[in-house]
Length: 233
Image (tube, rainbow, N blue to C red; front, side, top):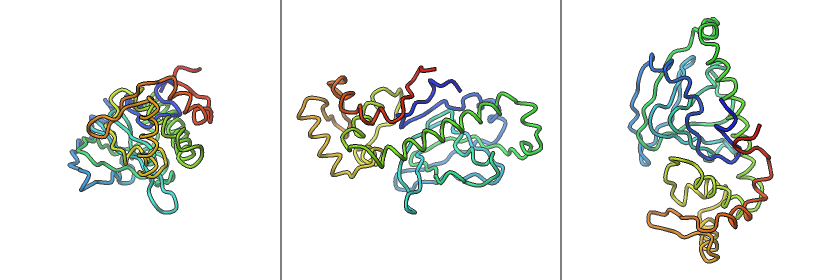
């Protein structure tokens, strides 16, 4: 995983573990027919590794025994790497599909016999790097929705959506949850940004950014928490 593949302000990551695709295609393909009315939690059996081939899932952190949306993951990502650490969910997160997704599932019992590490050393290195990156991102996202001015958080989120290729369309409710604010606060701040000429709201609840430099100024406090940017060494 190259560092530019993930950055500390991402709300949507994809292709994080693309190197696993060929390995995972030897496993079982599963189609999950999830919807917003009938969401499906993605939970692997012990020693079962799950790779997201198509669609996107939501990653929730557990805060005060209640889930909070922190991250979106798209195709090319392992979605339950905790199984490689002993079969226990140790990160306090849950993965949920709210649209149809295609998964590749493979039993990795052999991992514990060290055969996989010997046969696929590059995969072992990749998953260690990915775990480090995604855990750091996860912790940063948890911090970002807890601290900092609401306007800065919302602007940072909107900029990330603007800069991210193929990011799923987000409802205002989702934007509010990802920014760690209430829907009412999000609506008020979006109206404030629209009145100041920073953005315009379009059909379907989407927004179009009009003044990128000003948005970056407004998000600067949020963006100085961790100085990791795409392309930095």
